[in-house]
Length: 245
Image 1 (cartoon, helix red, strand yellow):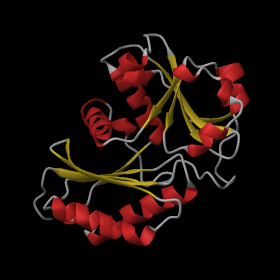
Image 2 (cartoon, one colour):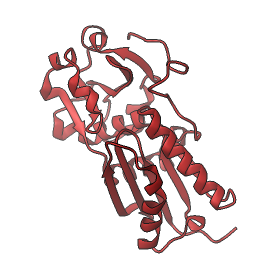
Image 3 (cartoon, rainbow, N blue to C red):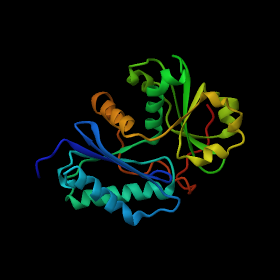
Image 4 (tube, rainbow, N blue to C red):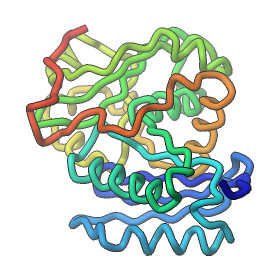
């Protein structure tokens, strides 16, 4: 096995976004991002190769690799996992790869944004990702601390699916966080009833993903996932039952 560098790669292909981030000693060294209305998956290997060349590292010398496993677009999840399996095969299985939940990342981003967004301790935060029309993959947590994110995560719910009416009338979160690339969220008439000042719209950032990975490494490695899709948005075969909390 070759000696490893201190560099890691993070791949996010959920929704219409393709992001490649290279970390060095846990800090962003390189980041590139594309938005694709039509998937150009045949370009992903070139984008990754370019990122590795710029950072002067080969795939077999990366200390780790991370890929977002969903929830989200069936095509996006499949693309990211397929590319990651290809990278593992290309290093004869030496590359250590882990999955990341987009819902966990959104909640962590909300914790980081809490003070700026006016989120007070005790507030219930719901991370929402569009599924089939009118339904959302969801995870909720309570902000218990401004700095101890492990305590914030410890009380978080498991992932579930909820319809937009139940979000407003039953779940009643104090704040909602949503990925800016999740376009369907903004077309939902029922969610337009929610106070716009309490919707946190976050853009994927190299800085936040590096902080999230460092947090998981130091305090909560259970946040890392196996390399398999969390949900497949466009099929009912693996979709959980709708839940109301």
